[in-house]
Amino acid sequence: MTGMAEAARFDALFDHILVGDADAAVAAVQTGLDDGVPATSLLFDAMIPALEEVGRRFETGEYFLPEMLVAARAMRSTMALLRPSLVASDVPAAGRFVMGTVAGDIHDIGKDMVDLMLEGAGFEVIDLGVNVPAARFIEAIQEHEPDVVGMSAFLTTTMPQVARTIQAIRDAGLRDRVRIIVGGAPITEAFALESGADGYAPDASSAVRATRALIR
Image (cartoon, rainbow, N blue to C red; front, side):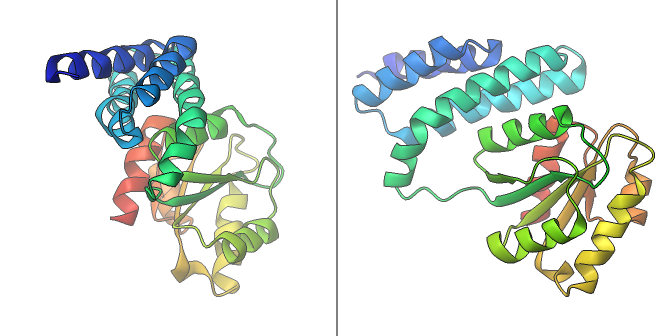
């Protein structure tokens, strides 16, 4: 395949992810794999750049939550198809991330968006779900040895659980083993840092950027 044709392939896949056309994105990935295009090329030359552009547009107000959500879902669909080839190629994950909504809080939309964006960016994500007690976060750190732990709180009444959970991780002697990032509608950067977190993300796009910064 000529360089121009290869570029056109990557451009098309980029556009499919950008607009959230999951069916077209999956078809493009399958055709690429069938034609012998390395899975790493599809991922790093088209898919991840598309997701980064989605994040940029969200931050500038060109995209809103619905556009971001369909793009992230298209990325997840293509990753499901691409992952076996990436594993066979021994491509390491960008990092391991444990995610959960803190105890007393059952909101999951923001958490799920972060999961989608991180998975699309190449991270291995272990989602603990909602209403997660501190003990479960501690168990997950011991079991999965993540690089980063993410905590979400959507209610002002559950915000104190962030600090309590971080303190519990500290009391368990595990705080130095992970970086912690927090977010959610009522959370501010000042609150996150006062609670003992290493970072703060107001939305899913910035969560990817903040996570990358924490593990560099």
